[in-house]
Image 1 (cartoon, rainbow, N blue to C red):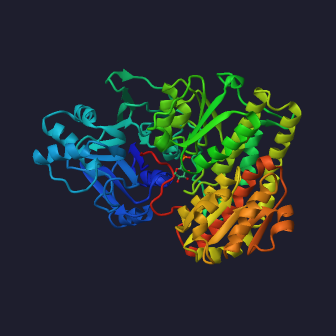
Image 2 (image 1 turned 60 degrees about the vertical axis):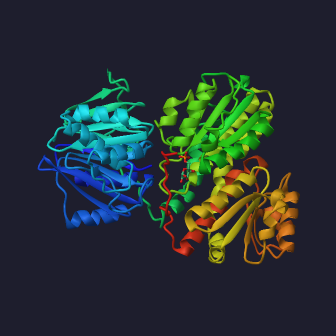
Image 3 (image 1 turned 30 degrees about the vertical axis):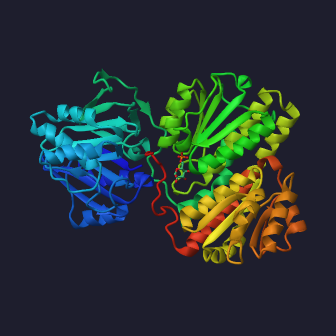
Length: 608
Ligand code: G6P
């Protein structure tokens, strides 16, 4: 979490740092700040609580000048999101921006306080500036002081720092959290990711674990964890410099929901050969047919995509599949017989827990496959194989199009693995590919239900609790629906396996609790409808999301019915994701919450 940008430039840097921070706001928006060297000498800074507009306002009141500077947008870990706790943190000798957590900050703080350092904030980051200052006070030069301080830090971090009187020096460091170096003409940059620097340069070097970098206007020297000077590859980032805008949509989330037919089409286009009716995966560095055990790890919405994939891989490819959330998996010391396939699903490719789980699986001799949306992310770089979701940049904190694109990739993978293992013949492969190819057009039809869904929102917005029910692959969609509602409307919601209802949650049902039942016709339809009847019998108010056939037979007692187009059972999770996204969106709008940047959340979670 937290976004970092640094520019050591030829002209005033603050406007360009602000633009970089806007690109990084998805990483957190509790507070923000910038530090520069005024007159090329003295550290000067402006900070503000809340979103970037507040910092912009502060900068209008009291402008900040300088041709070298560092900026930060914060997602609070240690210390409340106040101006006082906002980055950059500084002493008169050094200013630092930090993403991550310094785990030994209490010990360091005690030690430095005992030595006479005065702390002004509650943050772990402030210990870094005092630590560096203590080394500077001992007579070390800035490079040596930074190196010495880094050796004392435990935890995960990406850092950028500038020093009093050093107008041609910026130092960056990475351990656990990503950091990229950007090359300009007589300028150099640091950023949390390539997006932060896309308005400045496409020429990028990704720092490796443990790297430290010393930037001057004319270049950079990189050092590895052992302090040896190293050369890292320079790549051209594929991200375009233009800011992503909302177009005619009121929110990014709505725009991204509406983009789904297009981006699903794009994603499927990279994996399906429609003429031959077959999946065309890029070449894998291992034999898919030889895999008999799959572990899927992810967080949040990406985890629910993994849960859907479990149904697909078990049913179609007859594989042994385990799915877990990364924060649990990474510490539970799972037994992973060598040669299994471990799949990591992540929009950002940077989620700290997922990345740690990936490293664990690697150490257990698994083949590592990542499914990521952001190219060149840390997960991609550490995997044996990557499949991209072609969702394009997703700005809304609540994931929508990245989720359905993950499903599209996983569906293709399931078909390919089923075929490779001889579980399906070409005819079945062709049929499943055909079903997937129909998804974008059917999705566009689902979007036509937007108004009908919006009409339900005012009522749902009044609820204190909402329950989502589904069976089979629609069970994870129920969980995803509940997560979406919680994230952006702050209404308590639960996604439950419809058949599990009677073992507890049914006690919650009364006329005040809306129940969203997700039930396409198919193998499990009648069973889900029976569970719906149990709810209705207890005065539950049901919103029934089904297809045209289901609506004909079973919609009578539901308070409202959304009838989606008919589609092959295999691909229904992609389609049924949309109404639950739209419902949570309209409920949030009805409640007047901040849809794209909901409270307390961030889009890229680079802390544990
Ligand atoms: C955060 C986001 C979620 C996302 C999750 C996992 O919590 O708010 O939308 O699903 O992280 O992120 P990833 O980038 O790994 O998919």
